[in-house]
Amino acid sequence: MIKPILLFLLLSIASISVAQTTTEPARSIDSLVAPQFGGNQPGISILIAKKGQIIYQKAFGSADIELNVPMQPNDIFKIGSITKQFTAVAILQLAEQGKLRLDDPIQKYIPDYPDKQGTITIENLLTHTSGIVDYSSLDDPDPFAERRDFTPEIIINYFKKLPLQFEPGTKYAYSNSNYTLLGYIIQKVSGEDYHKYLDEHIIKPAGLQHTLYAPENVIVPGLVNGYTRDKGYFEHSYYQTLSVGFACGDLLSNTADLYQWNNALLAGKVISKASLDKAFTPYKLANGTSTGYGYGWFIDQNYGTTCIHHEGQTSGFVALEKYFPDEDIYIAILTNVKSGEDKTDFSDNRFRLFEKIGKLVLGRPMDNEVAVSDSILNKYAGTYSATFKKNQTMTIHKKEGKLYMDLSNGTGKNLLMVPLSETLFLLPDIKSIRTTGEFIIENGKVTKLIATQGKKYEWTKIK
Image (cartoon, rainbow, N blue to C red; front, side):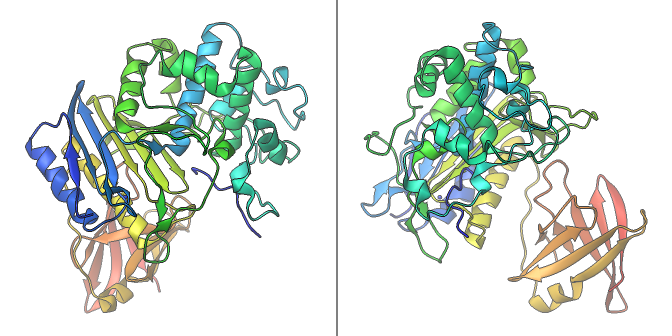
């Protein structure tokens, strides 16, 4: 089966600097980023601001590797699912105007949408608690479906008749379908095309100069090319029309505009502070459990502090933006290399780089990976039993020279273990709190693992 509707889901080293403060953190970021961009390869654009001032703005690598065009700091990228926050803000703006209510059932605006096992509200769409299946996960018999031009009606027809995955409001499940419906509702309520509404009522009032939707036949000055690397070398990314990401992943932007967007929201230029506070508050399910997602943003703990953020991934592009309100630090990172399901070491290394940038800016300790032989890693692989809780186990397995951890309670799977020494390993995928695991060797045998996550937890090796 083919899954063609997959969305949103980095010359010689070329670096161009604009409005950059030559501080020690800036030099440290240079030393992190530059080594990954040797030769003519896709690039990265980074902007970091603190307390209202841009402290770092640079681009590395190439915007076009065939023509050897250096990346510029203000180049434009596809931003994928970061589009969702623009859609969410448009909904909140219409709510402030009294044109809709967040507790309205979606059938009020889409009368022909099937009435399923529970009322789906606009808020359920905003918070990914509707139970509607994600259309980007569905099979299509046409292997070139992503190349077609889509309307919102065509996309909605992919999923509208499918059963819900759960009763609305009882669970959280990220689904692009939710935001496609929200974009369609914006059109119905405003009487305007979704993109025209965004441009007139959201983008222009926010002062954004390089944020837009443009079909593939439109020339956009400064738009970089997207690439993939799944076979050990760079290729053009798989062609995918932006229209397939209507309202959930079809916008273009650059780092400067994303920072301006954050500033405009905080200044109340497009919605009120009360509405923004709701968007920045994790939604709670019917049973009181927090989902970690508000209206168009994730809200959780990164590096031990509150982080409001979102990622965007689409064919050939990765976008990442994080705002740390307590420190008033904003980070935007855009890259032009990504494939639909890229799980390669190359991709992992780039995502580790993003995490290191965040740690450095926040002044968190940097961890240096060391080399550990396969023979030692093989000794650590096995099953471990928790001494602090009955019937809970941990499995550690080795793949391609790296260790990964799976927890039996379902809270973690394929968690990378990065060696900081021959026995001490960091779990970088757990961002809310620094987590390490130290293997204990007694009489030449691995007997236990001591996990540290604020407190110490002992696991005994049983096989």
